[in-house]
Length: 618
Ligand code: AMP
Ligand code: MG
View 1 (cartoon, protein in one colour):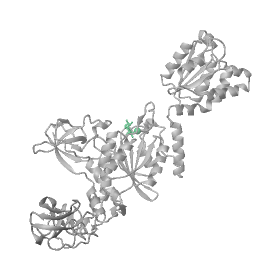
View 2 (tube, rainbow, N blue to C red; view 1 turned 60 degrees about the vertical axis):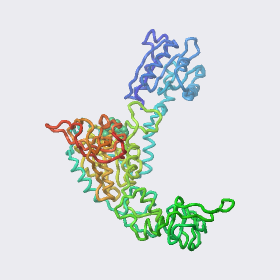
View 3 (cartoon, rainbow, N blue to C red; view 1 turned 180 degrees about the vertical axis):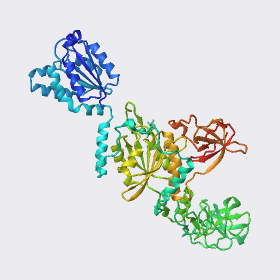
View 4 (cartoon, helix red, strand yellow; view 1 turned 90 degrees about the horizontal axis):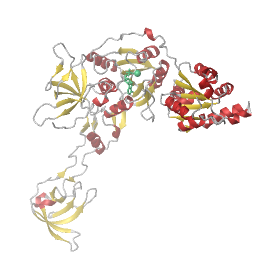
């Protein structure tokens, strides 16, 4: 968007008598017509290189998008506008002036005598025009078509470019192009109080639980390497024993226990993985490694530490006789067939949440895939005109990088859920509706952040209601952070879609994703999605808020037997994501009352275990 423009008339005579300036006003008229909303600054300066340069720099540093100069581009000794411009710009855009020259040459060969320059300083495009009113008017018409696009490109802003591009994508992916029914023109008529009742947390949880019951459970077979965190759908039985052969537990000698202590002839050497058909007779043994199969006839292993070498071959490459120093017991240091997992043993019960050890066990038992309860498909979308992709090099004025999307993707992943990324939607009803229409066919659960508060650009609820016929199950919850948290459902292409519209502040998005989204997803595959609770002791005084608060905290474990101590992660402001970094728990702080304004250090409070708990000693 072209927001601010400067027009500089460069002329000694106009500087002395402003009324002589005709070209500046001609540019002004053109610009104010083309960009009626832009701020336009006009000045007249003499043909002095230093002054022109100073003014150009001043405007460039004042967030001006476009500077048009007129005058001082010719061959007379005082004409220095191109030199001043060259001293300021970092990149030249020669084709702009070439295009002007080509066009002007059609009218007069005098155009050859213009030395106009066009270029970029930081985020400002500067274009020199000739001094005569006629030439200015002709030249501005040559460049007018590229100005907006050039400025968008310079700003890496691509707001227009991006929206054109996004629109093309959405049009392509969403053949039923929709125009939002939401009218945002009458901003003065927007409600000043939320029409949504403020629910208690328990009510919000009950609603989510009841609504999510509609999620139809189904079973899918997935490769075991993807199964961590998934819920087992059917009992899984061992089809093979582990170990499948009698295996040595030690490095030592496989013997016959009946031989007792004494000297043995070493008949064979068997390493792990070796198949050996030696049958031992009385007074014989075989050297074995841990995990090696026992030879036939052997019923025990004597560890190497309990033996003595009696005789070796002359080159010491073979042991010929050893002495067993301690009489062995039958079965000593032998894992019998099925010792670890007997055939038919239950490897996983229905409802088990698969962990790494279970994956190892299943692999050991020959399973490559297992039946699990399918989880809903999840999509993440951010909303907000101020948001830029974190990967963009330059942050545009008044913009911030989108931290929520990548954070929520990671949070879901940390808890075992994959999701698709639906990008950033803009705070415009039609664009938002198109983005939602693009996301819904690809997901069961849509998680959006931003756009649910009371601002005139908080459009999510109206768009969901008016364009998707959504039912808003709740739109406000008595919680801190996360008051405007919204939960909705709609039918889309014959399927029910669950929509969690979370507030945009990153901490609110983080906490609400845990408490509402993850809890709901866990609930779809387990009996209950609640996080486990722990009693903890506050390390310091904690002031209470009017709303029940979910404070992010770390735990420290005292050496003496006591509850873990919980310390808040600094200022709990909902935009300050540092307060969630490294959080092991969400403390469930009660709301303040007349008699209770703060919890003192040492008070016991309940904590939801939502993160990793590391053993940090006090
Ligand atoms: P909203 O919920 O849209 O009213 O946004 C509340 C605050 O959160 C504003 O300061 C936004 O700029 C900020 N915000 C919204 N979405 C994001 C996001 N995806 N990443 C970082 N900050 C955000
Ligand atoms: Mg917003």
